[in-house]
Structures are given as structure tokens and as C-alpha cells.
Image 1 (cartoon, rainbow, N blue to C red):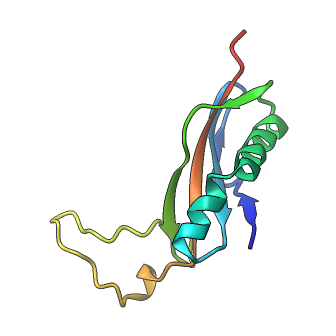
Image 2 (image 1 turned 180 degrees about the vertical axis):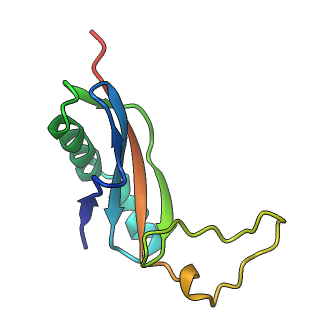
Length: 107
């Protein structure tokens, strides 16, 4: 299992933004542990630095969420408060992602 920086999903400027990291681990507890690890934080900092953010820092505890095979966020509750049918193909978890907020170091 591994971590992957999703540059096409990340939103970065030279001052900061969001780095999205994916875990292909389907086990919820292990995926969350992986996304909250030092390796995930290092990957987010490296991605931000690669995109031109000087001396980047992480400003949050990553928000982790499940995604399906299309990369869509799985939202089990509809707008009216009812639950979606968990047997639908779009409800099958293919992995988890974490959003890391990064900023340039303020000196």
C-alpha cells in the first residue's frame, strides 16, 4: 500500500493551498493512520515545495475521506437526510484521501 500526491486535485499557489494525498489502502483504520503519518506530511511538504511554495508548512490535521473508483468523494447521506443505498457501485470504497493545507513560512 502506498501514498500518492494527486497534483491534478491539489490547489496550490506560490503562497499556499491544498495538497491532496491518496492512500490506496481500503482498510479504513490503516488508511487513516497512513494519511496522518509523518510520511504523508513529508509528501505534502515536498509537493508544495515542488510547486514553488518557499519553505512550506502544514497548517492543519488532514481531513480524510473515502473515494470511489472514479475518485469521487463518497457521501452516504443525501441532501434530504436519507441514506444512499450502500450497494450502489458509486458507494464502493476504492481508497481514501487526505487534504493538507500548506502555507509558505511566515518570517
